[in-house]
Amino acid sequence: MKLFASVALLGLAWLAGQRLAAPGDVRRENAVAVASAVPDSSVGNIRYGKLPAYGTYWRTRDTLGVYDRRPELGILAQQLSDGEVAEVKALGMRLVRLTLRWADVEPTPGAFNRVLDHHYRQAYERGNNLELVVVIHTTPEAYNLPHTSCGPADADVHNRRFAAFMAKMARTYPKVRLWQLGNEMDAGGWPGRFYCERDNNLASGKRYARMLRTVYPAIRKANPNARVVIGALAGTENWNANRSGLVDSGSWNYARGIYAGGGAAFFDIMAVHSYGVTAAGSVDHDVMGIRRVMDSFGDHGRPIWLTEFGHSATHDLYDGQRKVYRPWPHNTGADDAATFDRHQKEWWEGAVSYLQTSGQLAKAIGFSMESTDGNGAPEHHRYAPPGGKPDTMHIPRHRRKGYGFGIVRYAPGQTSGHPRERRPAYAVARNRNTHVLSPAAHVGDLTLHLPDRNPARRYTRKGEWVTIHDVYLDNLVPTEIPMTPR
Image 1 (tube, one colour):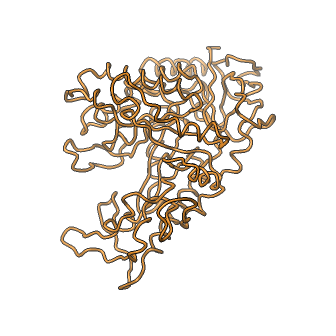
Image 2 (spheres, helix red, strand yellow):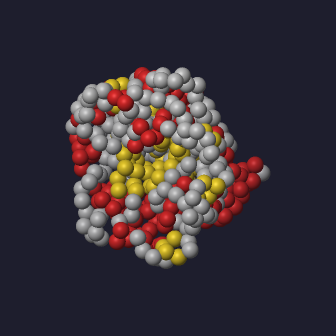
Image 3 (cartoon, helix red, strand yellow):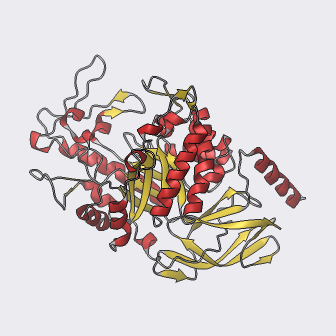
């Protein structure tokens, strides 16, 4: 009777196309199976024997994924010059997030520039052992077609173009295993303009799911080793049609739209971003917010990545979530540079502690390596509340840059070159990954509760429990195993 009920529930979920349900005990943290993949010869130092902590999820009713749950810290580093590569490696990191603009790669239809070549060589062909998370952004102008009230009039045509582009990228750069499709779509980021009106995130998420159903198979066919990361969500309810601001922050309707639109089978990793005055008030709120949505659609255990987090001087003065200004205690003429650095360090400490202890995140990627963005400019350190007096915090003129999001900056008088000055947060980020990065993969046996499915590879069964033999568990991307009904 229990078996019949489990199978019936699974069938109903599959027909609905909106919820995932795992056969057997779907909430078990250790219910796991893996694909019959042969370890890639490029992956070094594989350890045989006991497997590390792992998590599981059902991408489809017949595809069970397994991933290494040991937390890993990465960094956004857009340039990847020799000096920046050295800085990433000095941090003990290998996971690097960078942006690839479709508009730069294909400025005119059918004409492709090899924009990613430099980063690809730096990561994979020069012995640096880096792994790229490539974020796709910005549609070519030639494809910015007239819109209806809900995306372009020919959304399916656009999706097919995007699928063809992504298939080409996956074939051209086969060692890139992680493609992130978009960025903060629920807050007006790309590709939000193509997926429904900005004031209806639920409908927008359904349109994004429609894109995934076209693009995901193209990527996986072009490179079976590739995986898709959701364009990270900010957790906003709606973006006003006139882009005047955010409304009702925190309900994750875009994510609900992705699941309601049948997108769950067409991505591998969920992703969110988290910013705010303090890590304690931001990261858990955002991670658990998306986890509750995932659970509500039966998607238990799929990995969540925090693909951006960080802190700049602006956060010391303005709490964007609560729309209030927060002047810090200040003495006239005092140098507040140390205040900005200290608060950034505290933010990183909170975020890294959550990554390492919460059990909710598999990876977190800090924003960013270099602190030369606009948030480090002098005008960003003075804010006036409506009807109030300007904030009086002060940084001496010779140190007015370098208080944005980055954890390294140019020292006074330095305008180029490496190494750069390390901010206090740098020490928090350094050497957090030793227990993850060695070895690169594990092989061993796994025992799981699987009453109504058999793995399509070598296994032994004892009642409702299955032991899968010689499981290959990579420490970067999820591994999959196809299942058949018992």
